[in-house]
Length: 419
Image (cartoon, rainbow, N blue to C red; front, side, top):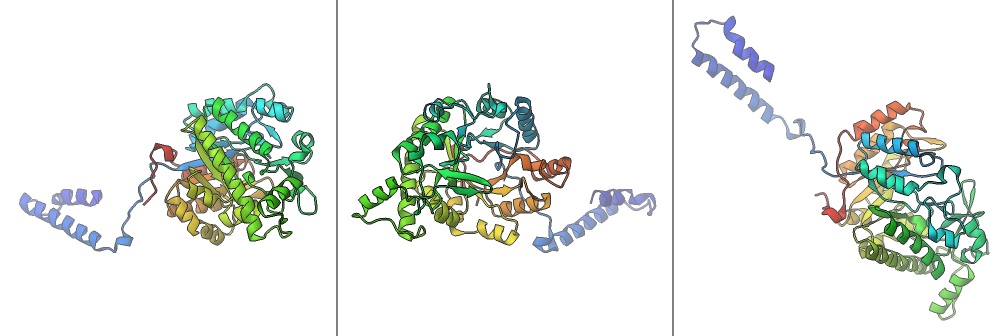
């Protein structure tokens, strides 16, 4: 358009220069009017309407000590947080409870487990949670510690060996649950001593660190095949006139009974967190509801309805785009979106699985198309260090996804659902 106007202005140099200025001005105005009329006559969907950039969007990443060394060296950790800030991420979820140990110096863990800190050499003499909070906040990052293992622990851990009475089992008495090549056991989430231990760990962090929230996932539940230990069976019989729990671990009433017990504990945890620090967000990062409920007894849909979660990051780690999209459109997800910020966890890759930047970008766009609060990636190491694509190519890709900084969508700061 600017070139066209310039051409109109210069037109007298070869046109009849004796034409009046009034005629020239009329010609220019007439031409611009025609161009405007033609432009407005195009179909609306043919016109360029750039969507407004979001003023807030979760742009998160999980930091873990599994298949990743980001936490094991002070300068490496600091450099990683610096890079995330440069690429316009705004939220980090550092693991603080993994492998049966805390990743920060814990008096609670020392008392119960006999060791205050994960024994990995790179963690000794450090408080990585304090480092992450200090550096993260300097960079403007929201810091929400993540209880990655929940009630789960390695079968050979000090916790499992020192507290065998805390463990639950299948109906045949076996306890080991395979997680890839690793043997896991599960603490019994129905025992008061176990509940107190987990709650004490959470409160210890909320009280002692300047964190922005606490995140749990469906490891805060229990594999539905478990729950047949003597303590739980006796509790069930007490509440069912002596009747034993069904042998079928998927029996609807048996699933519901255990899920409701976990929900009651979740209520107490939420209340305790808020009593300790009222502006500490309670975040949940579960699988989709049907899987989370049926296989982990974690009824996050009910938790959301009860108002005991303030941030939901739904793990949808799917390669099939149709399946990925279908998970975004379930009724319970849409309902949650109308109450609290709901974001989507996207898989960036695993140790033995590469996820292309094209797939990541496509999934992010599908999430944005549906007005979710944002995205978070599992996990830091696979953002650009576990891919067939070069690290610089991956970082450029994320720079395109997040071209400018935006704020974290905080419910406590007046977040409203997207219309």
